[in-house]
Amino acid sequence: MSGMIDLRSDTVTRPTLAMRQAMFDAELGDDVYGEDPTVNRLEARAAELVGKQAALFVPTGTMGNTIGIKLLTTHGQEIICESHGHLLNYELSMAAWFAGCLIRPVDTADGILTWEKIEPYVRPLGPHWAQTGCIELENTHNMAGGTVYPLETLDEICHEARKRGIGVHLDGARVFNASVAQGVAVSRICRDVDTVMFCLSKGLAAPAGSILAGPRDLIERGRLYRKRLGGGMRQAGVLAAAGLLAFESMIERLADDHENARRLADFLGSLAGVRVVNPQPATNIVIFDVAETGRTAQEVSAALKEAGVLMNPISRAALRLVTHCDFASEQIGAVEVALAAAVRG
Ligand SMILES: *Cc1c(COP(=O)(O)O)cnc(C)c1O
Image (cartoon, rainbow, N blue to C red; front, side, top):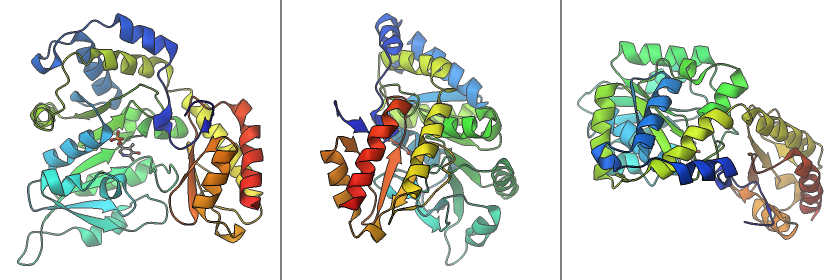
């Protein structure tokens, strides 16, 4: 919302002026016929960045996950997913609706699954069991506070899954944040997963769009699922143009968002009654609990809004803040003043 400091999500980022110009100038065609040169360039560049054979431009991350899961499963299977995962909690049960699969949730404290935690839930087909069709990982993990998978953990899960013929889908909505935080290429993070989705519309600041990438044969089938879901977008090059620019100009600067999140987490930790769930945020998300202040998260959110700062409650006791390119370090002082007053009541 204009005039407000908006830390509800990194989805609120608006396209940069350069992106708007690139959108204006974009060369266009009908993408359902495969004839939009800008979409074709975006898909080729995206595939290269994540180190996969092919990529598909989809309107939303939810559609990318929906198609990714569908490609790795058959009807009546189970999908292993961390219990606070986006796929399970915020995608309108698309895994059930479109792929016909049940999600088998696995609890963790920090959103990061390990093979040790996954293994007990892996099921063969049996008289009482549905077979595990795929494993879904979220990197960074949104509701755990932007946590990042250690590479060894990711590699081990993929290795064990592959041995058993189980696919791995990465919900990498914010995988570029993980890459910047770890100082490793996105292609290295994605090396052993079968399919990966990432969002152009979050920290990368494009107005809309996500990418699903993977092996060529799967992505070709994914193209049909995209059409079936209503995601054939015709002159989508106007959006792809912004995405292409995002790759050039919006990745490295994510480090600034991470630094701003760390500064806000430090400040929150100094406030009486506030417990920061992830006191050392790895990326751009901070979750904090206000129960001890005697105020609910809804009350704190409302007080912040009065002071011109937007943050969403995520439960009765906790709020989430997300830093992004439309939030500058110069605004941290104003947020701190608003936070201190809002938790004091
Ligand atoms: C935002 C997000 C998505 C996709 O969201 P859309 O709004 O459908 O683009 C998927 N997974 C995670 C972890 C997200 O944060």
